[in-house]
Image 1 (tube, one colour):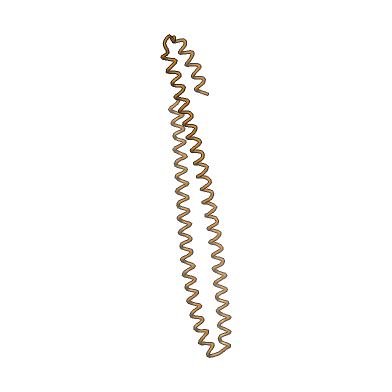
Image 2 (spheres, rainbow, N blue to C red):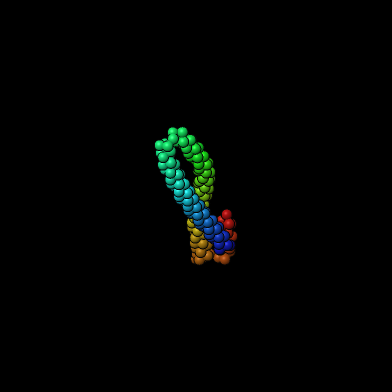
Amino acid sequence: MKCTQSDNFQDQLDKAQRVQEMYKERLRKMQERHSQDLNEMAAYYESKLLESQLLLEQSQDKTHQQLRQCQQSMIDMEEEMFSDIMEVRLEYEDLLEEERTKVCSLQDEIDECDMQITDLQTQQADFQDHISYLEEEIQKREKIIRDLKWSPGSSSKEVTFTQKATDGVIRN
């Protein structure tokens, strides 16, 4: 019976360890995915920014040429350029907001995993304390049984009585 409880408890400890490792791996993967998403998003927006800057510079060159030709052409180009920039800006602000929402969601998942890992670590420590306590109790009771079995002058009736009384204590 001692081995079965110890085995069951060890199985529980092993299971808790596997669960903890699984959550750590999930957390690591989420952090990697989070980092990768942020890097991809930054690269994407940087390329879009460079693209927009290039377009802006090209538009400005055209605007300067048109300024020399005609003041009205410049006004028309500025209005068109402003409209395009605002459209691109609004489009990317929406995309940025979506990405922020995703990042917040991932952060919530990470925080939840952190809490679960903390809970599992606390449970593991409690289990380990309980195992230590039970091992000490088993050793104490085994010593009492050995001492009672081998004490001089003890009859088999005394040993049987003592064993029954000790069995009642061990089961509790």
